[in-house]
Each structure stands twice: as C-alpha cells, then as structure tokens.
Amino acid sequence: MTGLKGTGAKRGRNLIAVLVVMLGVLTLAARPVLAKEAKQAKKRRVIAVTINKGETYTISGLKKGSASDSKAVKNPNSLTVQPQSSGDIVLLGTEGGSWKLDVTLASGEEVTYAVNVKAAAPPINSLAPGSSATAIAP
Image 1 (cartoon, rainbow, N blue to C red):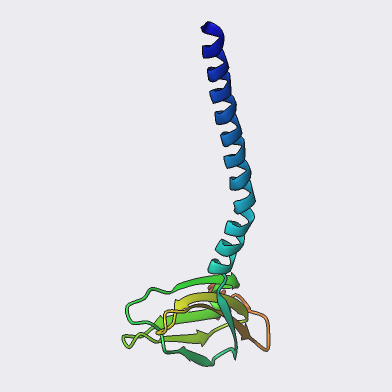
Image 2: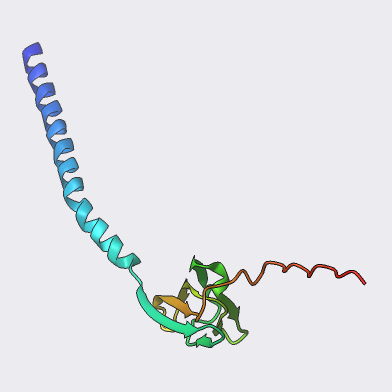
C-alpha cells in the first residue's frame, strides 16, 4: 500500500513542477508584448517651437485645470513660462537655450512642446551684478 501512495505523491509533485515551469514560460513570453505596449502608451507627440530672444509664443487649446510640467534642457534662463487665468501658457524667450513642456490638450491628448530659443549672441551672465568704476581723485 505504501508504494501506491508514493507514486501518487510523485505524480502530483511532477504535475505541480510542470505547471510552474509552464507558467514561467508564459510569463516570459508575454513580457516583451507588455513592455512594447507600455512604451507606446508613454510616447507623446512632440511639437517643435522655435522663437527668437524677446519674442512670445502662446500655447492655447489646453485642458482646463490640467497641470503642466516644464523642464529646462539647456540654459534655465532662456525662457519665461507664464500661465494665464484662461488656461493658456505664454512663453517669453529671454536668452538662447531650450525647454520641454508637457501639457494636456483639450482633447485629452498629452503632448510635449520642445521649445528652442534662438539668440544672436550667447548669454552674458545678465543676472550677475556688475562692477563699479574706480574712483577718481579730485
């Protein structure tokens, strides 16, 4: 009688082992598909905008009450971001550089504005204090 119990237990363990291996194979096979779908879901449409130093650009047609995320890519002093009460965003180019702004349009689409500010000359440390002239004796 003990021989029959051992055979059933072995068969049960083998069945569990096979099921665990098959579950692992199925999980690994599904992983690239899930990663591909997640990558496509995170991909945003990029809208390239180029303005000159001193010019303004208005981003309109945004979803009411949605938050926008802005990040300086090159030279944080290159752009002034001014949210308006109407929900629009006014951009003012102050120096050469670039920024990225993540916003949600009224349609619900999430887009990224890649803003490039062109300047005729490189920034000259405009925020640094100047030095005073030397005193002349009377």
